[in-house]
Image (tube, rainbow, N blue to C red; front, side, top):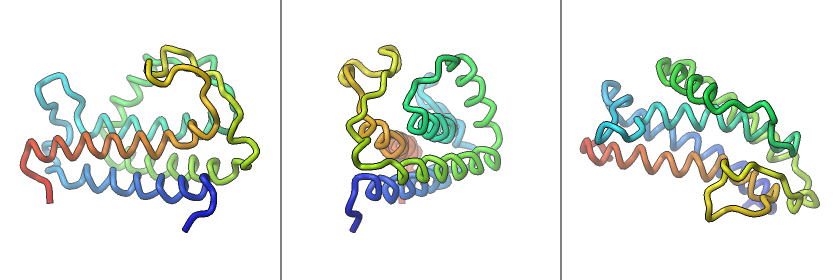
Length: 162
């Protein structure tokens, strides 16, 4: 049993990445880019988001500073391109998950209360206010778990749940 928040999140983050990939692979290949109701996000787009943001979050944890040059338009373009190539997407998901896990593991307990400024437009209204490093290191686990649920919902619409 993990004895620190960091070790819990290391294990939970890896499991979330594995479960996210498994959820995607349960979908038939021709449905992985299917958009329920026309405007909803396809499964590949959601996995691409997680792959990219695991790397961005690792950088944020290390630097403890929001990147001033973060371009949301570039993020959207990169996500769309990545979603077109499963091999590249899988590779980046694995690479950035390993990267964020290593960074989470290295966070000292005494640093968990450090507050990081995150622009208000990047945070949901319910989460506004100071963002502690403890909250930031939980993000990859939470985000991948959330998107696994979204992908499983798509699978349920297609009657592909185990």
